[in-house]
Length: 250
Image 1: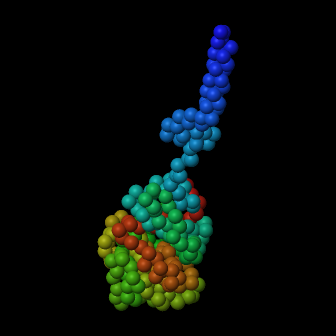
Image 2: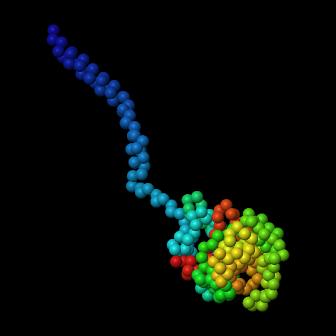
Image 3: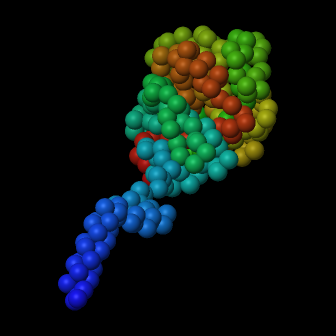
């Protein structure tokens, strides 16, 4: 008897069964992508973000910014309207850990000297000195309003007479911050030591505004003077950057 057809039939049935079994198996999982491949795929077509640069004080040019000490973390920017103007604005800035500057106040209206600003200040010239100066000492006729600066008080802080427009000077020295132009830092604002000589002037302060121009100082309304005094922190090495806007933009 010939068994060949039966053998072929059995073989065909076996192949059919194997084919069906393979078809029923789930597909083999794809090999997982390596972390570096995933990261590369996630950033495909996208550029890396640019690092944020430290923020500068917008009104100051490179020459002026270079004069600000690296240790300073507080800056009082006093910007005059023009070289011969006696009106200016005062804005407070703080430096963050990255080295950028941020405003700590709105611009405050202020007065400066009658004839404006000069980079070559001399006694009696009725100009405010242009430059960058430290702020280390304070005082006034009234008690300390809460400043952390050394604060001297007493009857010597009294302004008498009238200003250039006939306004009373009473109360102008109730609160003052000494600007370290031609003075010895670390002493009372009343100290008359003049390292550059008496002819170069001195006694340049922030003080209470009396409604008109000054002889050389910068004056602010009383509420702003108190705010300034409370804000200044000797541990942050505060400085004033002062001058007419065009000079400060250099």
